[in-house]
Amino acid sequence: MSASPVYVGKASIALEKKKDSRWALYAIEAWGLGMFMISACAFTILLEHPAFPFKALIPVPIVRRWLMGVAMGSTAVAIIYSHWGKKSGAHINPSVTLTMYSMGKIGGADAAWYVLFQTLGGTLAVYLFKIFLPAYISHPYVNYVVTVPGAAGATVAFALEFLISFILMFTVLFVSNHRQLKDYTGYFAGFLVMCYVTFEAPFSGFSMSPARTLASAIPSGVWNDLLGYMIFPPLAMWSAGRVYQSTFWTKIEAQIEEATHLECIYEPHRHHNAHWQSSKKETA
Image (tube, rainbow, N blue to C red):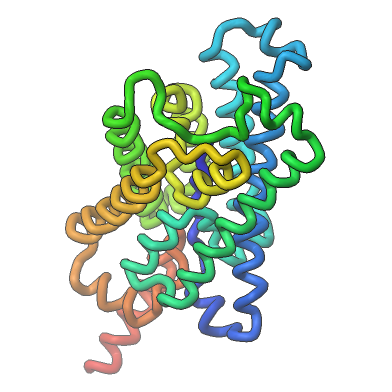
Protein backbone atom coordinates (compact mmCIF):
# COMPACT_ATOMS: atom_id res chain seq x y z
CA MET A 1 0.00 0.00 0.00
CA SER A 2 1.09 3.55 -0.51
CA ALA A 3 1.88 6.24 1.85
CA SER A 4 0.01 8.66 -0.05
CA PRO A 5 -1.00 11.32 1.76
CA VAL A 6 -0.26 14.49 1.07
CA TYR A 7 -1.54 17.11 3.39
CA VAL A 8 1.62 19.16 2.70
CA GLY A 9 0.28 21.74 5.09
CA LYS A 10 2.38 24.42 6.79
CA ALA A 11 5.74 22.75 6.59
CA SER A 12 7.56 25.49 4.68
CA ILE A 13 6.43 28.31 6.96
CA ALA A 14 6.96 26.19 10.05
CA LEU A 15 10.52 25.48 8.98
CA GLU A 16 11.20 29.15 8.41
CA LYS A 17 9.62 30.48 11.60
CA LYS A 18 10.68 27.67 13.94
CA LYS A 19 14.20 26.82 12.94
CA ASP A 20 14.84 25.12 16.28
CA SER A 21 11.97 22.68 15.59
CA ARG A 22 13.31 21.25 12.33
CA TRP A 23 14.25 17.93 13.87
CA ALA A 24 10.81 17.62 15.42
CA LEU A 25 9.23 18.07 11.99
CA TYR A 26 11.56 15.51 10.44
CA ALA A 27 10.66 13.10 13.25
CA ILE A 28 6.97 13.66 12.58
CA GLU A 29 7.50 12.60 8.97
CA ALA A 30 9.15 9.41 10.22
CA TRP A 31 6.24 8.85 12.61
CA GLY A 32 3.71 9.46 9.84
CA LEU A 33 5.03 6.88 7.40
CA GLY A 34 5.82 4.56 10.29
CA MET A 35 2.19 4.62 11.42
CA PHE A 36 1.00 4.11 7.85
CA MET A 37 3.23 1.05 7.48
CA ILE A 38 2.17 -0.35 10.85
CA SER A 39 -1.43 -0.07 9.71
CA ALA A 40 -0.62 -1.64 6.32
CA CYS A 41 1.18 -4.59 7.90
CA ALA A 42 -1.40 -5.13 10.63
CA PHE A 43 -4.44 -5.06 8.35
CA THR A 44 -2.75 -7.19 5.70
CA ILE A 45 -1.99 -9.82 8.32
CA LEU A 46 -5.52 -9.62 9.68
CA LEU A 47 -7.20 -9.93 6.28
CA GLU A 48 -4.80 -12.27 4.45
CA HIS A 49 -2.99 -14.50 6.96
CA PRO A 50 -4.68 -17.92 7.31
CA ALA A 51 -4.35 -17.78 11.11
CA PHE A 52 -7.21 -15.29 11.09
CA PRO A 53 -10.74 -16.09 9.85
CA PHE A 54 -11.26 -13.22 7.43
CA LYS A 55 -9.63 -14.80 4.38
CA ALA A 56 -11.97 -17.80 4.70
CA LEU A 57 -15.01 -15.77 5.67
CA ILE A 58 -14.49 -13.29 2.81
CA PRO A 59 -13.24 -15.44 -0.08
CA VAL A 60 -13.64 -12.73 -2.74
CA PRO A 61 -10.27 -10.91 -3.05
CA ILE A 62 -11.71 -7.60 -4.22
CA VAL A 63 -13.93 -7.41 -1.15
CA ARG A 64 -10.93 -7.96 1.13
CA ARG A 65 -9.02 -5.32 -0.83
CA TRP A 66 -11.91 -2.92 -0.38
CA LEU A 67 -11.80 -3.49 3.37
CA MET A 68 -8.05 -2.94 3.23
CA GLY A 69 -8.62 0.21 1.22
CA VAL A 70 -11.07 1.55 3.79
CA ALA A 71 -8.55 0.84 6.54
CA MET A 72 -5.65 2.50 4.72
CA GLY A 73 -7.68 5.46 3.49
CA SER A 74 -8.87 6.05 7.06
CA THR A 75 -5.30 5.76 8.34
CA ALA A 76 -4.16 8.34 5.81
CA VAL A 77 -6.93 10.76 6.79
CA ALA A 78 -6.13 10.31 10.49
CA ILE A 79 -2.44 11.09 9.89
CA ILE A 80 -3.20 14.04 7.65
CA TYR A 81 -5.54 15.76 10.10
CA SER A 82 -3.65 14.79 13.25
CA HIS A 83 -2.00 17.50 15.33
CA TRP A 84 1.45 16.25 14.35
CA GLY A 85 0.51 15.78 10.72
CA LYS A 86 -0.55 19.40 10.45
CA LYS A 87 2.77 20.52 11.90
CA SER A 88 5.00 18.80 9.32
CA GLY A 89 2.52 18.95 6.45
CA ALA A 90 2.12 15.13 6.46
CA HIS A 91 4.00 14.56 3.23
CA ILE A 92 5.04 11.03 4.36
CA ASN A 93 6.05 10.36 0.76
CA PRO A 94 9.23 11.46 -1.05
CA SER A 95 7.22 11.92 -4.25
CA VAL A 96 5.14 14.56 -2.48
CA THR A 97 8.14 16.20 -0.82
CA LEU A 98 10.08 16.47 -4.08
CA THR A 99 7.05 17.95 -5.81
CA MET A 100 6.68 20.53 -3.04
CA TYR A 101 10.38 21.33 -3.37
CA SER A 102 9.99 21.86 -7.12
CA MET A 103 7.11 24.26 -6.39
CA GLY A 104 9.11 26.25 -3.87
CA LYS A 105 7.18 25.08 -0.81
CA ILE A 106 10.13 23.55 1.05
CA GLY A 107 13.88 24.10 0.94
CA GLY A 108 16.32 21.62 -0.53
CA ALA A 109 18.00 20.61 2.74
CA ASP A 110 14.68 20.21 4.50
CA ALA A 111 13.33 18.15 1.62
CA ALA A 112 16.34 15.82 1.83
CA TRP A 113 15.83 15.31 5.57
CA TYR A 114 12.10 14.73 5.05
CA VAL A 115 12.86 11.97 2.52
CA LEU A 116 15.47 10.37 4.78
CA PHE A 117 13.24 10.35 7.84
CA GLN A 118 10.23 9.09 5.87
CA THR A 119 12.31 6.13 4.73
CA LEU A 120 13.70 5.47 8.21
CA GLY A 121 10.29 5.64 9.85
CA GLY A 122 8.60 3.32 7.37
CA THR A 123 11.46 0.81 7.43
CA LEU A 124 11.58 0.73 11.23
CA ALA A 125 7.84 0.01 11.35
CA VAL A 126 8.20 -3.07 9.14
CA TYR A 127 11.25 -4.22 11.11
CA LEU A 128 9.12 -4.18 14.27
CA PHE A 129 6.88 -6.80 12.68
CA LYS A 130 9.91 -8.76 11.52
CA ILE A 131 11.30 -8.79 15.06
CA PHE A 132 8.12 -9.45 17.04
CA LEU A 133 5.83 -11.21 14.53
CA PRO A 134 8.21 -12.84 12.04
CA ALA A 135 5.95 -15.77 11.17
CA TYR A 136 3.10 -13.42 10.31
CA ILE A 137 4.90 -10.71 8.35
CA SER A 138 6.95 -13.21 6.32
CA HIS A 139 4.03 -15.46 5.38
CA PRO A 140 3.62 -15.66 1.57
CA TYR A 141 0.15 -14.11 1.78
CA VAL A 142 1.62 -11.09 3.59
CA ASN A 143 5.26 -11.00 2.40
CA TYR A 144 6.22 -7.81 4.21
CA VAL A 145 3.52 -5.95 2.19
CA VAL A 146 6.07 -5.54 -0.60
CA THR A 147 5.32 -3.56 -3.74
CA VAL A 148 6.19 -5.66 -6.79
CA PRO A 149 4.69 -5.86 -10.30
CA GLY A 150 1.69 -8.16 -10.60
CA ALA A 151 0.94 -10.82 -13.19
CA ALA A 152 0.46 -8.21 -15.91
CA GLY A 153 4.16 -7.32 -15.71
CA ALA A 154 6.39 -4.36 -14.97
CA THR A 155 5.27 -2.20 -17.90
CA VAL A 156 1.65 -2.22 -16.79
CA ALA A 157 2.68 -1.80 -13.14
CA PHE A 158 4.74 1.32 -13.77
CA ALA A 159 2.25 2.83 -16.21
CA LEU A 160 -0.38 2.55 -13.47
CA GLU A 161 2.02 3.83 -10.80
CA PHE A 162 2.55 6.91 -12.94
CA LEU A 163 -1.18 7.35 -13.53
CA ILE A 164 -2.34 7.00 -9.93
CA SER A 165 0.49 9.19 -8.62
CA PHE A 166 -0.32 11.90 -11.16
CA ILE A 167 -4.04 11.82 -10.35
CA LEU A 168 -3.43 11.97 -6.59
CA MET A 169 -1.09 14.95 -6.73
CA PHE A 170 -3.17 16.87 -9.26
CA THR A 171 -6.29 16.27 -7.16
CA VAL A 172 -4.57 17.49 -4.01
CA LEU A 173 -3.32 20.65 -5.71
CA PHE A 174 -6.64 21.39 -7.38
CA VAL A 175 -8.87 20.71 -4.38
CA SER A 176 -6.60 22.42 -1.86
CA ASN A 177 -6.73 25.62 -3.92
CA HIS A 178 -10.52 25.52 -4.31
CA ARG A 179 -12.31 27.88 -1.92
CA GLN A 180 -15.20 25.54 -1.12
CA LEU A 181 -13.30 22.24 -1.13
CA LYS A 182 -9.92 23.04 0.41
CA ASP A 183 -10.87 21.90 3.92
CA TYR A 184 -11.68 18.42 2.58
CA THR A 185 -8.47 17.79 0.67
CA GLY A 186 -7.36 15.06 3.05
CA TYR A 187 -10.65 13.23 2.54
CA PHE A 188 -10.21 13.37 -1.23
CA ALA A 189 -6.75 11.85 -0.77
CA GLY A 190 -8.09 9.16 1.55
CA PHE A 191 -10.84 8.27 -0.92
CA LEU A 192 -8.29 7.87 -3.70
CA VAL A 193 -6.16 5.64 -1.47
CA MET A 194 -9.21 3.44 -0.86
CA CYS A 195 -9.92 3.19 -4.59
CA TYR A 196 -6.31 2.49 -5.49
CA VAL A 197 -5.95 -0.28 -2.90
CA THR A 198 -9.18 -1.87 -4.12
CA PHE A 199 -8.56 -1.76 -7.84
CA GLU A 200 -4.90 -0.98 -8.59
CA ALA A 201 -2.97 -2.90 -5.93
CA PRO A 202 -2.99 -6.25 -7.82
CA PHE A 203 -1.04 -4.65 -10.68
CA SER A 204 1.80 -2.88 -8.85
CA GLY A 205 1.28 -3.35 -5.12
CA PHE A 206 0.23 0.32 -4.97
CA SER A 207 3.32 2.23 -3.93
CA MET A 208 3.37 5.85 -5.20
CA SER A 209 6.29 6.31 -2.79
CA PRO A 210 9.96 5.33 -2.95
CA ALA A 211 10.12 5.37 0.87
CA ARG A 212 7.12 3.08 1.18
CA THR A 213 8.65 0.60 -1.30
CA LEU A 214 12.02 0.68 0.48
CA ALA A 215 10.30 0.23 3.84
CA SER A 216 9.22 -3.24 2.72
CA ALA A 217 12.16 -4.07 0.44
CA ILE A 218 14.89 -3.56 3.06
CA PRO A 219 13.51 -5.93 5.74
CA SER A 220 12.30 -8.51 3.20
CA GLY A 221 15.21 -8.45 0.75
CA VAL A 222 12.71 -8.32 -2.12
CA TRP A 223 14.04 -5.81 -4.65
CA ASN A 224 12.00 -6.71 -7.74
CA ASP A 225 12.01 -3.87 -10.29
CA LEU A 226 13.01 -1.43 -7.56
CA LEU A 227 14.26 1.23 -9.97
CA GLY A 228 10.82 1.72 -11.48
CA TYR A 229 9.30 2.38 -8.06
CA MET A 230 12.03 4.93 -7.39
CA ILE A 231 11.45 6.81 -10.65
CA PHE A 232 7.85 6.74 -11.84
CA PRO A 233 5.90 7.97 -8.78
CA PRO A 234 8.14 11.04 -8.18
CA LEU A 235 8.16 11.79 -11.91
CA ALA A 236 4.37 11.56 -12.06
CA MET A 237 3.79 13.87 -9.09
CA TRP A 238 6.36 16.35 -10.38
CA SER A 239 4.54 16.31 -13.74
CA ALA A 240 1.22 16.90 -11.99
CA GLY A 241 2.71 19.94 -10.28
CA ARG A 242 3.94 21.32 -13.58
CA VAL A 243 0.58 20.74 -15.27
CA TYR A 244 -1.28 22.36 -12.39
CA GLN A 245 0.99 25.39 -12.39
CA SER A 246 0.76 25.90 -16.13
CA THR A 247 -3.00 25.42 -16.19
CA PHE A 248 -4.33 27.15 -13.08
CA TRP A 249 -1.76 29.56 -11.69
CA THR A 250 -2.05 33.12 -12.96
CA LYS A 251 1.00 35.35 -12.85
CA ILE A 252 -0.36 37.37 -9.95
CA GLU A 253 -1.11 34.20 -7.97
CA ALA A 254 2.39 32.92 -8.59
CA GLN A 255 3.86 36.23 -7.42
CA ILE A 256 1.72 36.25 -4.28
CA GLU A 257 2.47 32.63 -3.48
CA GLU A 258 6.17 33.25 -3.92
CA ALA A 259 6.02 36.30 -1.68
CA THR A 260 4.17 34.41 1.08
CA HIS A 261 6.30 31.24 0.69
CA LEU A 262 3.18 29.21 -0.02
CA GLU A 263 2.19 28.80 3.59
CA CYS A 264 -0.31 26.03 3.04
CA ILE A 265 -1.67 24.59 -0.16
CA TYR A 266 -4.96 24.00 1.59
CA GLU A 267 -5.59 27.65 2.26
CA PRO A 268 -3.65 29.82 -0.20
CA HIS A 269 -6.69 31.92 -1.05
CA ARG A 270 -6.99 32.99 2.56
CA HIS A 271 -3.85 35.05 2.02
CA HIS A 272 -4.39 36.18 -1.57
CA ASN A 273 -6.94 38.92 -1.04
CA ALA A 274 -5.11 40.47 1.88
CA HIS A 275 -1.80 40.58 0.05
CA TRP A 276 -3.40 41.76 -3.16
CA GLN A 277 -5.23 44.56 -1.38
CA SER A 278 -2.02 45.50 0.42
CA SER A 279 -0.11 45.56 -2.86
CA LYS A 280 -2.73 47.85 -4.42
CA LYS A 281 -2.51 50.30 -1.50
CA GLU A 282 1.28 50.42 -1.70
CA THR A 283 1.11 50.99 -5.45
CA ALA A 284 -1.41 53.77 -5.00
